[in-house]
Image (cartoon, rainbow over all chains, first blue to last red; front, side, top):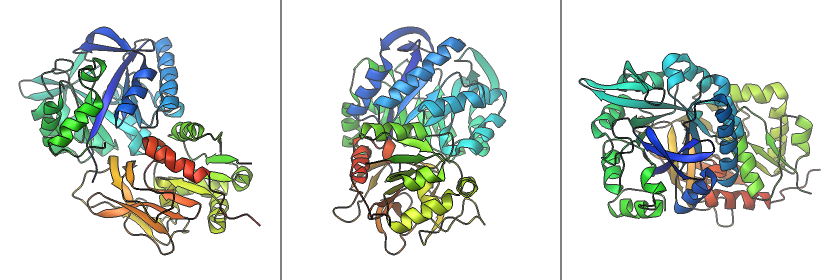
Length: 250
Length: 203
């Protein structure tokens, strides 16, 4: 049986891990290599690095961070943020990412998903969907939440799957960093729309939220604040999930 | 002396294989040179992308023949994910494309009831005692799989909408559907066991 994955997320800027609320108000949360190694030792199933930098110089720093993290961990590493063209994605894969997550670039030019999947295989391509609630469902936000499009988030996940993505990283913009729990209705809607695995993101405070997400169809849960703040270790979260009957790797 | 070569098959994931080999004390070269692959003591065939493109890459470089010979001679060879599938006769992923055929089996789709790709950690039931593959959790990222093992190979298995072949081994020739380089301490221990094998001496 495939186990449910617990994935700590490192938002990285200038070679440091940062964390904010609803993508802003960032504060320092540590060294990415140290954190990634600690999380692997605690039982993390995968590491996600999101590059929240803004300039090309900082992008180069992110590649160096990815290479350093890769050298220190033996679990999968997904990287997103700032991937504008195929060449950016391939550079990240060449320095040690196992998967690349695309959001803004894919919304601007969806064919980039197919092109990347053709070159690297769909298992390397993750569609990052930042979903913002509105009166009739959810719309896609791009540019780290700075721009809200009219694209329907659930439909867009389906389009991404048809174009060849291997996974959907589904973040609720409304819940990000709040600790209010994952957006369960959003998860249900996307889980019934696509067959590829879904990583739930945004709003986790503890194991109870994660169980809700798994029951709604998530295959993996992503969290940042609870692990960075050491509110709970990954091992403690997994123990709590296992006690409630969720299959996890321990 | 041990010389480890990683077959260059595409852009992706090679860095993770290199990192894992280094953590196990090896200093691998990444190459598509047939001489280097034939001369290496240990060869890793990683694999990304589609079956058809992977076979086209091996045929274009002449590596199809070199790899088949190595495997027939029982020299240490580790095929990973698509690398394992390329050793088979065919795959439903790329109908009409002929694989290396050193494994007398075919690659097919998962049952329609499960999520695809299979992404994540699955429990592997190890093969024979004393082999390279032990029981434990391994990281998988695959859309296709081998349903049942060919004769003369020791299978390890896992479940995803039914039992499938997680790995096959015959002496120092090992094929993993999962990614040992991404399977944490369990995966590194597997790699170390394989690196310690000498296999049949080439004549």
